[in-house]
Length: 344
Image (cartoon, rainbow, N blue to C red):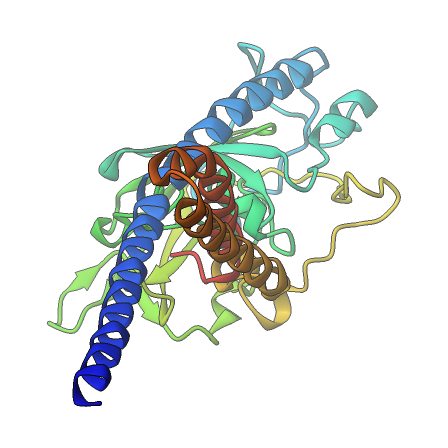
């Protein structure tokens, strides 16, 4: 009896040990997916968006450069109106003539499509920016908050980005110093921002500050023309938000009201409900829970099926034949799990 109990205990302990080892391997694989798999997806999306944005720049360049500038003055930024370049031709925008309808149609932002390019030389950032801050949007690159101003116009333009996954475009924004330049190229022109100074705990100044995840008031219009960069903080955590603010160096352009386009419904403006949060792109998508559980279950069933086939047939041929299906289940599970979890 004692020998039988010992054997049973050994099998239980061995099973628990193998399960823990398997859990550790899957966890390491998921970390690898987040570090390298998401970066591959991001690189492909950036290549595609870059081509799309350059095509839209060329489209705007086929029409007259008739984008009116905002009135100059200390409340509108520093310096004179910025000339706007279309297709290599620079022209000072008039202040009274209407915008050409073809140009206006090209300027209207489309949810999920590229609307800008952002360059931050101090930290080596060069990214194409998408319109939207949903999970699918921020997988492509930094995203413009739809409820805020567009970069280069008056008010608070805000852009969110990841720090550790999907290419980590905002990985080093904590290294920005006051006065560093941020250049944003939109369909209305190129605009330069200078990073604002904020107090640090040592009594000096730095180019960022940290807020709790409820402090969405940093997205509000504060009466100046600024760019707000948003990301999760610290790295690999969504416990807080890191914020970088920068003031527009030139006067902003003033565009007619452009209704964002929802590609699924051209007649409806985009509404992402930013008044209560930062969007699914940083907080995670709760709708992904069911497919996450389902694909995780399929992965476990696939493992069980491969093990069972190896028991009744030749082990390694059974494993080899089962591997492609199991890997597909695992990859799809990781995709949905990453969508459900906050993306850092």
